[in-house]
Length: 420
Image 1 (cartoon, rainbow, N blue to C red):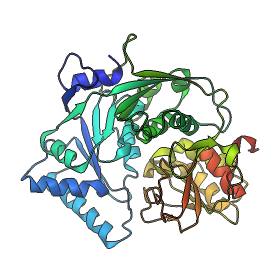
Image 2 (image 1 turned 45 degrees about the vertical axis):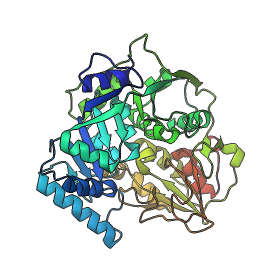
Image 3 (image 1 turned 90 degrees about the horizontal axis):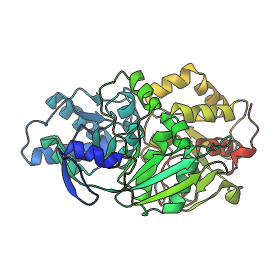
Image 4 (image 1 turned 30 degrees about the horizontal axis):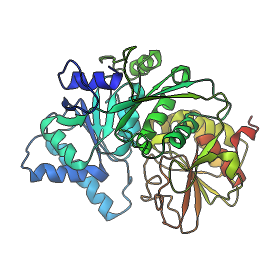
């Protein structure tokens, strides 16, 4: 079996599973945010439930609209707070105490290798970076998890993505996934797993692995996964969580297909409006003028991303025609960026830095685009109206491409940029 099949086999109490089979699995951890959590709570009460199945395995995070940008948002926050108190859920992350849910789930060690984790948010697939089976579910399915601690899954077929080679300067994991999106298309991996392997993945940091697993859903994937290795073990040790089961694919594991990729010659890529798989070389669209650049989100708001951005911005200023918004993915990352002097670099360049939130990514309460405006973003989606007006345009790219483009005021290939 491959790693995903092994995890689902363990969680469902079976010796083995096959793609297409339906299994009922025990859930190791469940997460909700305020956008989806209030519905789960509503349905929880409607079915007459009194207590959650396990208050130690539920995580509740306010992250999408924080601080509250409207009375409606404040009401959703209130519903979450009251339910957490009522049920005795200690893993409740209020405004100023956590950050973007997927980053917090990893930082606070709510996820472990070998776990089955569900979240009422599509980018829950991020946690595959440390060898968990993690996937997004709907609010009604989450009600079933809250009440029973179990959920059914169809065992997914798995695509093996074997990546070799070394990244060039200012070419990063985001560029790798955009290449994968171009190959597979937005539905090329519907209800499939993507298992990332090869020398490039072994050399990649946990931050980078989180980026590529985060975007699996953008090609229709059910889950992404990287087999645990020494980097995984070191990460878990740093989070003081050393009790877990490592699941690795058998040498003769079967896959639906295999993608063989090399990053040696990979160039910076950009996803053009208004589909993630509308991918072109940055050099092909250089010169597109930008009203806004956004760097952050659960895809590229980690400390590794911010360090790249600071390296490029140091001693430079944002173009007069462009506004730059930078959002660290969590309070912990924000503090690290402060200690390292990154925030000062951002502010001196003319950027705006806000508290950790999903707000600008999903068109919530900050960073909204007006009609006709163009944004280059490090997020994961560029659907019509994703970040504001349906008459705006969003391009997706790496933090390196975004930072250089903020300086020039137009989409620019970062590999030609001379940094200090």
